[in-house]
Length: 135
Image (cartoon, rainbow, N blue to C red; front, side):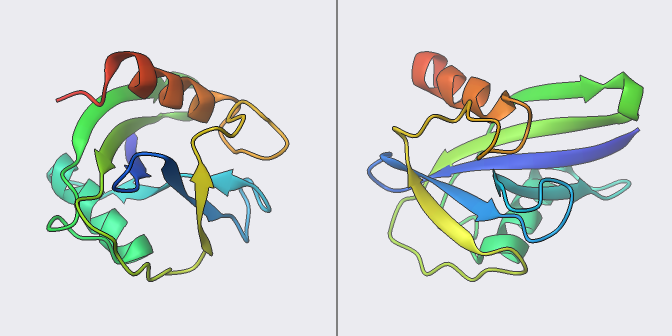
């Protein structure tokens, strides 16, 4: 089963969430959280930090990630690990491929025409709001 990570990064005040705007499929033209593939044999937390740095320039010195939840898609033979963290300082974003955007936490993250993930982003944001970021 292929592993992926999905990373929720909040700004220092926790009033904005970092997104990439997809320029290719899947979800072309939609906002999505940053993340990517977990390589075979790779430590999963290390993979999350690696993808975060590759896609945004944010490092483990800028944020402490917590493993929040997982989704397993047996019909697609993959799983997605969800990580979340709050920046400890203002950072300069360095996009890898997809343009990066800070969006207000007051967005309707269940808007299926604007956000990727079939409503999962809305669910994840609600989980952070209600239960916190995990371990």
